Amino acid sequence: MFLDDDGLHSLMGLDEPMEQFMYRFVNSFIKWELVNYFHEHPHTPYKISELSKALNRPADQIKNELQELSAEGMLREIKNGKKFEYNYDLSPDNAKERRLHDLVNQFVHLCRTREGRLRVIYKILKNGKSISS
Image (cartoon, rainbow, N blue to C red; front, side, top):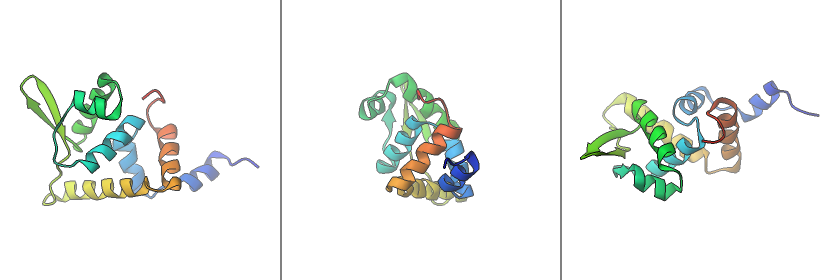
């Protein structure tokens, strides 16, 4: 018996705050990698070329995703000479940033289980950007 979309959605569903978090911040596989990378390396500014090398992804794809995460308020974009650097440094004193930090922590924790990773993959494929990203 095959599951229809509603059945699959209920199996692969997430709570509403995590659904919204993924819709806004983790809507591609590259953003998934970036969120995890910055979570592991907070307070450290990175150039696009450094992240491209660390994640083994093309710099132009990394750049677009970094700009979107910065525009959404997850990362700080810092101009250093002619180049931009990106930093994950959310303030615990700011309620909005603290909530975002909590969601990042929950997301990273979710990704530590096989079921969690499957849910993330399902959400990106269903609601995210094209598979090429």
